[in-house]
Image 1 (cartoon, helix red, strand yellow):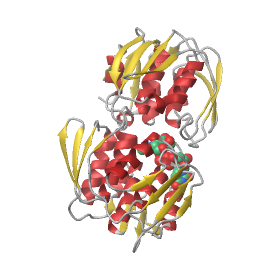
Image 2 (cartoon, protein in one colour):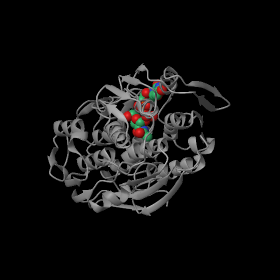
Image 3 (tube, protein in one colour):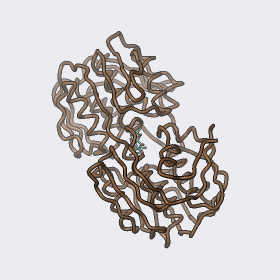
Image 4 (tube, helix red, strand yellow):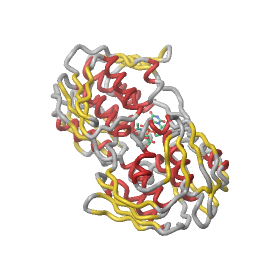
Length: 417
Ligand code: UD1
């Protein structure tokens, strides 16, 4: 069952509860739980492939993990930790690098395999390493591992060259146990950072300014474990909004904050869709066909790079031509070749795409190259004549608990095969 088949059908219709943001928020909080010995219960944490990898990383480090309900996990970090994240696991999932800051802070040392590249471009770690170095850690990269150690972490003023999500998270989770004050300037402002900081503060940390460009952390001597509930997944919510833009219809998304998707709502509004805040979450309605608008990706609160593939799929079916500019990753347009197989009219280089909208696309067998690219192809299939089969679906299952199921709930003609 590593493929998904989709046929165009009726416009989407209905109400759905958006999943917890396991990949972009839950994994980070699981890593942060290593900071304090004790038991953490994590709720609203649906299973995705990347969670399996993070659980294996945590178990390799010495934590005990147990499912207590379908979306609820119990993590026990009371025992002695072995501060090493093994190669076979880290190379499967980049977010494993998030254990570096917490391990260094709790154990005074960490050995983490380097994640390597992936399908969306070079993803360096220099800002993670430079920041930890500024806090007094010694880091050495050899034989594919980063070996880090410190006698004590000290507060520092760190200016990030780019508001990297991962670097902000790693530095934040190291700073909470450092001596004195750490200031992270040009910090990432993503809602997942705010979610993480709220969890750290409930553990006893003193974090101020999460969600703004300047995060200030006053280090404490120790933290205590506590429970957490993961925020609704804004990327899944956005994916469903783009699906509605492609297929038409009217949907209500529950369990997600409208404020986290304001730019998406604004862009979809410019395209002719209606997207509004509802008491339960987000309401949206789309006519048959939308108009093209230009899009550029930026760190939050800009248009998230993770929405870009879905936006390109939508623009491929809109009236008019749009220019899409990718400013976060340097090689995120490789999925366009798969859309071309479906009859899309797109010209692209490494950072830009010119998308000329077509009335409809042509169903074809295609391949998911990464999590969001695969989702985008499935969405394109909602407006392609015949049956589109998206192969290599495991990439999509890395980040979505069940995207085909969610779309089917809204009436889409989709099944796994
Ligand atoms: C996270 C998200 C990913 C999202 C991305 C940007 C998770 C699991 N992943 O990835 O879904 O697309 O944020 O919103 O939450 N960079 C450096 N040096 C560094 C760190 C980053 O040059 O030390 C560069 C990267 O190569 C990239 C850019 O900064 O070009 C953004 O990366 P970053 O924000 O760190 O993304 P991730 O945290 O890896």
